[in-house]
Length: 89
Image (tube, rainbow, N blue to C red; front, side, top):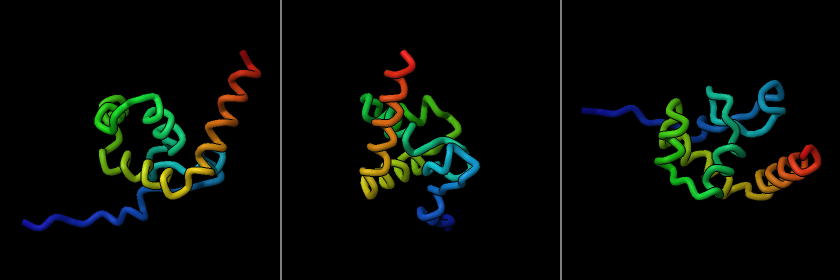
């Protein structure tokens, strides 16, 4: 039984029209930032998939791999989001 291979380079994308151009999981509109935020809150990858049941485990791992390859991009975005939340509270 052969299985088709998934090109993991296709799992993360950007579009200026979706999430303000932030990196997203392709085909979902879910930002890498959102996955990383959940993961930093202590959610396991399995728990993230259970919570966001339209995502696959490979998509969540791709988002985390993107984060590890580009931590400054996502961390800056998370910091800006936290600052905006503080200003609006």
